[in-house]
Structure formats: structure tokens, C-alpha cells
Amino acid sequence: MSPVASLSTTGSILAVAVGCAAASLWLLLPRGESGVRERMAARFGTLLGVVSLALFVATGHRLGGLGEEAVFLVVSLVAVISGVATIVTRSPVYSAIWFALALAGVAGVLLVLGAQFLGVATIVVYAGAILVMFLFVLMLAQPSGMASYDRVSNEPLLSAVAGAILLGLLTLFIGRLSAGPADCCAVPSKAAALAAAGANTAAAVAPEPPAPLDPLAADHVARLGGELFGRHLLAVEAAGVLLLVALIGSIAIVSRTPPEERFERGPRRAEA
Amino acid sequence: MTPSPLVLDGLLVGGMLFALGLVGILARRNLIVMFLSAELMLQGVSVSLVSWSRHHGDWGGHMLVIFVLTVAACEAAVALVFVLQAFARTGRLDSAAWQSLRESNLPRSVDHELPAVDAIPFQFPRLTPAGVAPEADEDELLEREHV
Image (cartoon, rainbow over all chains, first blue to last red; front, side):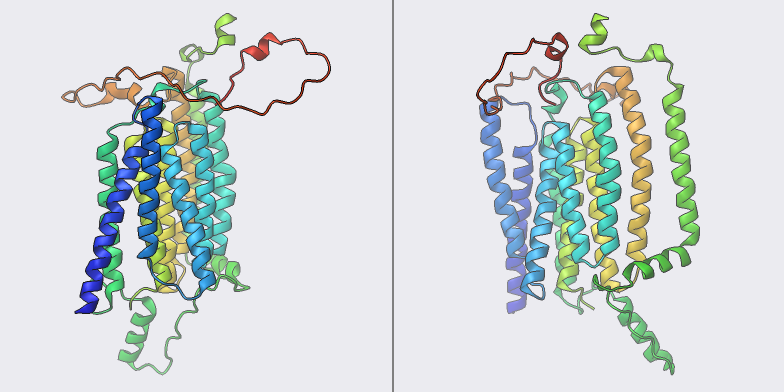
């Protein structure tokens, strides 16, 4: 009886957390209000967001060691809080900066999960290349001052509710996953499946369980490269072609616009 | 086999990032912020894929994340070109500037009058003036104060 009761308690706490997250996002999203009301909404939204995150942390699973738990908690909180700030910040430039911090958090989560190469690649490729491209475009295209379309949202309430429904369903699924192996939704691990297959065929060579992805293994990147350029060689070639096509396509689209269609703007251009 | 607690927490973080990106792409109207939200969704998917990879103890999720990175780079290049073209035609980064592309039976979205911004401007610390005052450059007066 007690596991069921504790599960339902956890479920109701998580439901409250998801509801608080939706209300917090609704309050924090730009809704085109005046300064005082906006500041009040931001204050309440921040409060609700902190409550929601605290509930999520309280129902989280206990990891092995205290150090691992603390590190994972910090990097995931950085990722999620910066993600919230990315979508609620009015100015798109600050939004891009917050997104860079979210990338740092995600890279930390990937490191804790044992993907050292991907963590570094996320920082290098996303924060180093893609985000800088975003900032270039923003500097080219952002009008001075706060644009009116940055101060309003499309249907903030419905959007927050949609996100809450998605998050609630995902949380429900993850909770069922952790409920136990007897549950219908438990995902069989490949190691267990291999072991079962080996037991069935009674092969002399038992398939050795795959080594856990140790983030500090010396040959982590070597094994990743072996997998990438061995099993996935065709996909690498296809990705190369895709990069080339994207490069040629973007150059073609830019260079085809006739110059007289370009929008004239800016005080200098207008005076000239 | 029940996934380890670390895998479950990774899945939860991935789901949170994905839901946040969904809210952003639905609610925000700035084309660039919508695009950043899509990238946030990709990050959530990457975290989930690496979690499953850890659960299975193989490299499949890592491989998928590498290709997600590649496709995200291509997507950013092409989409930013589209954003620049859209800005060149309308002078705005507003997704509602393209609402003539909507279905004919949908109502037109109308912007209401926004209240004026009365935010307190950020105050930089003042240094003690020293030396002679430089002449004001009229080009400098046209520069934007903030972004």
C-alpha cells in the first residue's frame, strides 16, 4: 500500500509543480502591460517559478553521491532557469545571451551524463558559431529601442497551458518509468536484452555487458570516433553534403534579392 | 530494467527544456526569439538522447546528437537568411507582419495600443569629470543607447 500512496503523493506534488510552472510562465511572458503591472507580474511569476522548481527538486531522484547530485542540480538549474529567461526576456539580444548560458548548463548536464565530447562540442558549435551568427543578424536587423512586437505575445495563456500539458505528460511518463520493472512501460535495457538473448542461445561466449560510458575514460573520444566513422560513415557523408547544400542555398537566396527591394531604414540612410 | 536515477533526472531536464522551447515558439513574436526557442527544443532532445544512450550503454544517442548539431548549424544558416530577407522586405522582425499568409477564414490579428514604457532607465556610475569637455560628435548623437 505504501508505495502506491507515496507514488500518488509524488504525483500530486508534481502536478502542483507543473501548474505553478504554467502560471509562472504566463505571468513572465510579455503581455504588453504598463510598467507597474508588468513588474508586479514579474515578481509573482518569479516567486511561482521558484516554488515550481523547488517542488521539482524535492521530488527528484536521489543520485549516488552527494557531489554528483550537487553538480547535476546546479547545472540543470542553470540550464532550466536560463531557458526560462531566454523565452521571457523582452530584448532579443539579452535573450540570445541567456540562451548562451542555457547552453553552458546543457553542456554541464551532458558532461555529468558521460558525454564529454558532446558537452564540449555544444559549447564550440552552438555558443561559438550559431549564437554568434544570431547576434550578427540581431545587430543587422534589430531596430533601436524596444519594438512593439517584443512587448506582446501570441496567446500567452494558451501557450503556457500547452507547455504545461506537454511537461505534465512527460513527467507522468518518467514517473512510470521509475515505478519499477513490473510496470508495463519499463524500457528494457540493451544490456539486459543481450544477457537474455545470450542465456537463451546458451552460447559459449557470453556477450559482455557494454562498458558504462565513463566520462573520464581515456579513450572516450577515440571510441566515439571509431563508432562515428565506422558504423555511421554514410551518415557522415550525407551530413557533409547537407552542410554544403545549406551553404550554397543560403548564398543563393541572399544574392538573388534585387537591391531596390531592400527596405531603407535608419536615420543616416534617411538623411542621405 | 529500471533506468538509473541519473537517467530519469536527465530525461526530466530534457523534457523541461523542450516544453520551454515549445512555449517560446508559440508565444513570442520576434522571429529571432522564435528561432532561439526552436534551438532550445533541440537542446532538450539532445539531453534526452544522451540520457537514453547512458541507459543502454551504447553510442546511438551520441551519434544522433552529433547529427542534431550538424543539422542545427545548417538550419541556422538557412533560416537566418530567411529572417534577413523578411526583415529586408518589411523592416520588422515580427511574425505578424506575414499574417497575410494565414488561412482566409482566420481573423486578422490586430495589435492594441500598448501603454508607454515607464521603466526606470539604468543609471551608470558617474565619474568625476576631468580635463576639457570634448566636442559633441553629431554622428555620435545618432547612435543607439541600448539594444
